[in-house]
Image 1 (cartoon, helix red, strand yellow):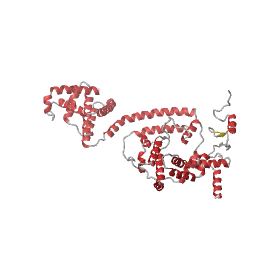
Image 2 (tube, rainbow over the protein chains, first blue to last red; image 1 turned 30 degrees about the vertical axis):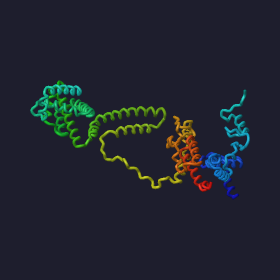
Image 3 (tube, rainbow over the protein chains, first blue to last red; image 1 turned 135 degrees about the vertical axis):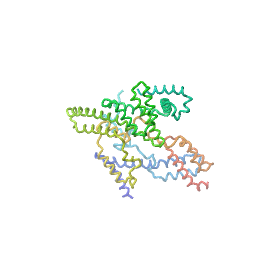
Amino acid sequence: MAAAVLSWAVRAARQVLPSYCTSQVRGYYVDWRMLRDVKRRKLAYEYADQRLRINAIRKNTILPKELQEVADKEIAALPRDSCPVRIRNRCVLTSRPRGVKRRWRLSRIVFRHFADHAQMSGIQRAMW
Amino acid sequence: STSSVLSAEKDESTASKTSTNEVASESKEGKAETPKQKLLNLIGDMKVEMSYSKKLKQLKTRDSKKQATNNLKGLDGEGTVHQRSTEDIQRGKPLNPELVEAASAVASSLPLNKKQTESELLAQLRRHEEITDKQKKGTTVDLRNVLSEMAIKKQSRAQRGVRISNRISLDLDEDIQNKSGIPSFISKRYFCCVLSQQNLKVGRRLNIFTKASTEKAALETASPPTIWDLEFAKEVAAVTAQPPRNGFEEMIQWTKEGILWEFPIDNEAGMEEDAEFHEHIFLEKHLENFPKKGPIRHFMELVICGLSKNPYLSVKQKIEHIEWFQNYFEEKKEFLQEI
């Protein structure tokens, strides 16, 4: 099982884009934490509908309580990484978990770096 | 002159008709009457049947014949008339001798050129008879004849165009050679193509080749293209894809990829076209498998209410949603019945 996880992780880490473009493309995630975050996002996408429906049965005043308890057990049985709460909006370039602006998906340090080099569209140093 | 001839005939026919109304019933066979009146009656009858297209055809033929006569008159004298009359007789069904006499009488009565009018009238009668015969037989191949007769004019036009384009090509060749350095053979080829196009359309149809209407090549036996074919196609596309030379090509590439919208902007670009609004809103028909009363029904009605207000899901997704609940509740049926 460890070997399977390792192979899967290696494959995920070395993702080469299946196109025939000649330019070099970086296929590595910044670090393993970013990789795990990517996994969680994928699983959350897969189980989103199911979770929504089971939650609709749970958060209900009409249906009998026994049914809701069964639904509780079912949703707990789903893989842990499928819940959206576990997703962390990391910086896309540095994988920094904190200080990330949602609009640009960048951490504050990277954002500042690019803004000072005039590589952020529409960003200007504030002065008032 | 042709229109004046027709108008003159019309006036005479109306005048004659009013005068000989009583005799008209007897004279339909037309032997006791004077040939003139008989001809006029015939022409009057004919006018009712003739259509505008036929008139045009006749006018065109008359014009072509006039040109021919003008060309011939310079060379010959009266002999041309006799030649043409014999030609007329030889061509199609020989005209009624009475009609010929009547035509000559009318021509003599009219102030215009007698021989010309007589020949024109005879041609008109002959053509009318031809048309009636063909219509009786059921064959309507007049267009071919008309086209062949009209081809005389067309050829001259095409030839004129050829001469003009020759002149143009010669001039342009000189300019091109001097100025931009484009090799002259390309321009010549272009003009040759133009000329050949004009010459191809001229002439009578031989009908050697049948139209390939339903001759579609048999489709490949392997109807879905194999993965190897797809890969090969992708490779070829990737190799031949040049980087965009300018902003326009870049925008074209982006539009193909889907990054850029298509202009003029279509408000319903990504939307599905198959489902109408009533399929989105009236979802009660999917609730047939559920029990009619009880908390489950209540719950499902709320679900449907929420789905009907959802503009983001497609009809298929909504149906899938309801079916999932159906399956879920069926699995839990035994459990529910214990309660």
